[in-house]
Image (tube, rainbow, N blue to C red):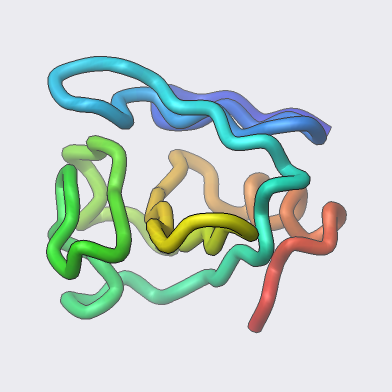
Amino acid sequence: MEYHDKLVGITKEYILFHHYYFPFGSKRIKMDQIKKIEVFAPTLGSGKYRIHGTGDFRTWFPCDVKRPSRDRIFVITQKKGWVRIGFTVEQSNLALLIFEKLGLIID
């Protein structure tokens, strides 16, 4: 139950976001620090065109220059802190399956 691509690495213990910090740098979030993960259709409001950074000072998006062409946007709410993490993956069906098995997806 692992998934890895150029944007993220997902295991049952953590999610590693590549290109989280500008100009480079990764960030790791432990699964037990995640309160929920929401899944959105890509729209202007959900961050479709947010290549990197934040637009609302609440949700941070790691760099993904192909985000406008992705089919889903995931948003993590952490148990502590106020910053959410919005991200995309190359194969959203596989990532979604892992998050569902871990009980993290909230509709």
